[in-house]
Length: 98
Image (cartoon, rainbow, N blue to C red; front, side, top):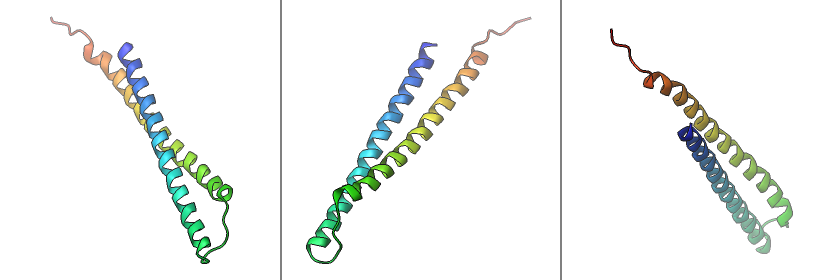
């Protein structure tokens, strides 16, 4: 039972790491996009933009994408642990000799 809990813990940690990485990536892309829009506005080639407007959509998108991937990874990990947990007792069962 200890190995099973350790495996579940590792899958949870992996899902959290993936969530943080994807969230950071999406936020970084949103900031870069905002800076490009601001540079275009400063050059007289685009409308005025506010950080709040741009980042509201970016944060919503970042949370959605990161959460979906984290759920997929956690689900796959928990399914793997469940399948291996069911297969392990059958493999460890003692064999009868006649």
